[in-house]
Image (cartoon, rainbow over all chains, first blue to last red):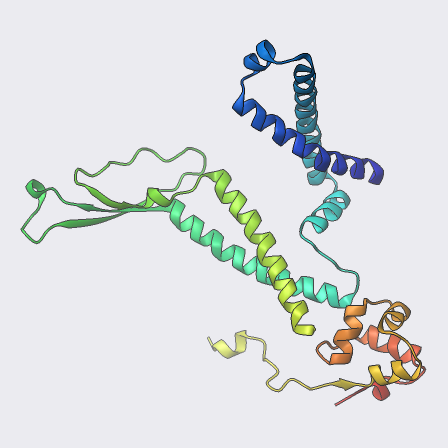
Length: 200
Length: 78
């Protein structure tokens, strides 16, 4: 299994640049343009890249499934990704401290994301015909929304000019997950490096 | 509820533990890497031990004592 896993990892790393090249090429030229105008060699290269793309994605999905179902594979791969070195007791101690720092900081950032996903707010200028008096110029609204399964329903937009709305800074689900992964890797590595430097 | 009872008591004054690892290592004419290999740790751990920035576990302390053929109190002191 180890050899297979190493082969899969090597292929994913080596094949990735070709996947990116194909995606860029396909963005610049459509498939029709390539097949109508291109030379034989270009068509062969294009077809090879298509096969590589399909194969790469199949292997990548298989790899992700392996990571989920096989703890040993997950341990080896993610340790390399997270730069986790535990060759002796001191490195285990550093890993422990860095993990603690990562856990707490990720928890705080997730609470922040939860806040922005549950609460919505906007600040808008009240139209003159709706103002109660001459001093009544701005309105600040706070909304609460939570749904386990369905996306939130459309909110009533105010009549006046919106000066600021929390939707301006709302992130997509993919962006949130990517930020959390990058944040965890960054905090863990920086904390581990800082603890190591303190010992030097 | 007394807040102080909920929290583990912290050690106010951390003990300053010194060691003679570098001296003992030099007596045996060993490099830090050699000593690290003998006791099963990385060179970085030996560096941290000799600098005093890391205190070893009991197991590592015993391994060092066994390697240097002495007792723990000879190697580590306050």
